[in-house]
Structures are given as structure tokens and as C-alpha cells.
Image (tube, rainbow, N blue to C red):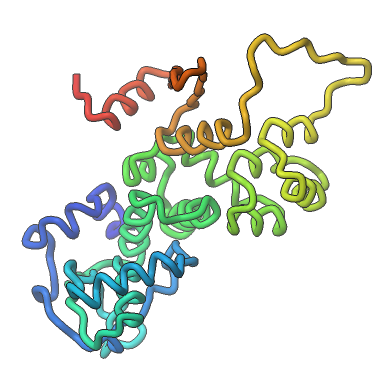
Length: 286
């Protein structure tokens, strides 16, 4: 636990932006690409082929411009384990190049997972299930609290709590979320539904929105007639964008389209602390 708390909140920029400020085994070195292997606890499990091919083309032309962050492999001390930069390592193999620059650091298992999580969350590289499982692992295996995780990844505590709940999803729902067939909003609506595995197939097959999914989960009472909508219903793309913005900002976001390319984006905060977090995220310091 002491190692985990020491690294908590240090941030990826501190680890990779100011190399002299962090203890290392040695400076930037160049090693054979075969001496590196991925971290088995890396939060990100899927890598887009097109992105890797584009990065490989860049590496083929310009080389690897940023060192890969590694530590001595705790299971095989003659090799290195990747902390941050697995995408560069994979693309380098496709380039192909035989040697890559590395920066060796001394880190605990908890710090390795923290840095990998921060790197991927900041770059929006994780799908919701990967993000949720990483938070849960830091909490269960290393004793992190939601407040500590909130500071580490710059997300609200409510976002952390909502994401961790996704680890309780039934297998089929979790698989669809991991593959991008449904959003985190769909998944949360299905969390407490008794036959979620069956309903999720209907959601995917019919392309139901989050609101339509929620109506399947909690149908109106018999004889209920919904009032005529006072404003136009939002389309699926707008609802999905609201979900994505809410996840990014950490508070509920509503988009109100007035037509002619004009509209309003409303951020709702539920405490002064959340308001402070919104201000900090947009670079305002009062």
C-alpha cells in the first residue's frame, strides 16, 4: 500500500514529461525490441488495426520519437515489462524496426497499473468495460478509494462509482459493451434487469436508444398514456453524444438543439465540489 499511495496522483506528465524528476534505473536507452513484453495487467486489451498501421508508417519514416516506459520484468529479470507505450511497441513490430528507445523506472505493481490506466483514460483509449475493470482492480487489489481514483484520473467520484458498477454486468451485456455494440448508458439501464442477457440482444438488433432501453426495463403502469412531447425527441446520435460528454466531464450533460446549427449545452452540477471540478477541467482557476 505505501508504494501505491506514494505514486497516487503523480500523473503521466510527471512520469514522462520530466524524466529527471523521477527515480530511474538508468536514462533513456536503446534495446532490442524482443527484450520487451507487455504488462499482463494492462487495462487496454484491444488495439485498432488501422491505428496501429498508421503509427507503424510514421515509425517507419521517423522512428520511435518518445521512449517506451518500462520496468525490469519482475518474473524474468533479463527482460523488460512495458508500463506505458505498448501501442508504440506493437506498431514498431509492424514497421518493422529492431530496436526501440526505453526509459527504465522502478515501480510497484500498483503504480504500473495506475500509470497505464491514466495514460489510456487521458487518451480515451479504453472501452467502458476496460476502464471499469481497471478501477475495480485498483480498489480491490491495492486498496484505492473512489476519492483517490477520482484525483488520479481527473474524473468525478460519481463517474468512478458508475463505472465500477459495470463490473457487475451479466456476461453477455459486458461482451456487447466491450465490443462497442452498446453504450455505458445502455449497460447501466440493464444492470438490475432480471433477464438482461436476452434484452441486450433486442437492444443491439433493433438499435434501441438508451431511453428506449430504459422504457423496456421499467415499463409504464397499465393504462398509462404518455403526454405529448413538448419538444422534439432527441435522436440517437444526440443521446450518445450526451452520454460521451457526461462521461468525459463527469457530470450530466444535456444538448438542446434549436435548429439552424444553433443550440445549448447544459452541464448540471450537484455540489460546489463538482462545480469546482468542472471549472478546473476547463482551465478556470478562481
